[in-house]
Image 1 (cartoon, one colour):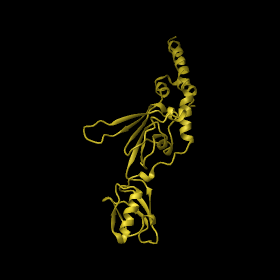
Image 2 (image 1 turned 30 degrees about the horizontal axis):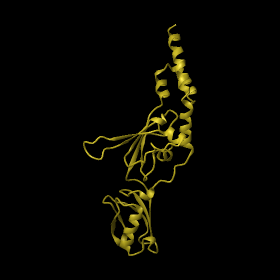
Image 3 (image 1 turned 60 degrees about the vertical axis):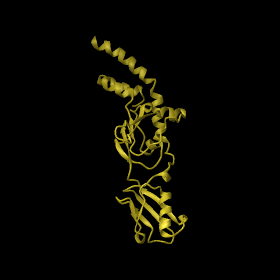
Image 4 (image 1 turned 180 degrees about the vertical axis):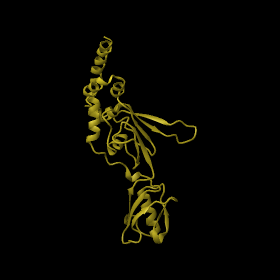
Length: 229
């Protein structure tokens, strides 16, 4: 008799949850089905221990793969160490060209290993919670597409980006990102551009949280009604 008293309301609650399943599933699938847009790698600022591919026309002694050393320089052989930390690839091209006495058009610099800066993924992301390389200015959507997307247990409209404080005594900044509005409605207002060391938090959906509180025999119904089965 007691079981009947709570089973009825529980079933009604599960039915109510089913109404929000389709937009959530559509958001997750849309995020996963589109490749990330090309982001601003050209604006990326190099640091140690990034790896650069440097090509100088007709100068094989200056060309090749170079790792940015802990002092912020790359070893350019006969030119010695050239400081590159904090510079974009285009600025590095100009600096090498000046040191080598050639035109900047004859120098090409490309980042082949992003290793100096990270962003952090937490919660219902595809794969493990982890640090991933920061590769220059890109939006939250492009970052999540690049790293595999989010899970079916996520709440796409409740994503948060936490940006660490720049100075002691300041509070971190917290930004809300509504993936559902961005992907299904074309509303880009919350599609924040990521900065180094940002933390992206993707919480569980309401259905997932409620399912953990229900009797085990009800949990399969949660997954069916919310489209997670």
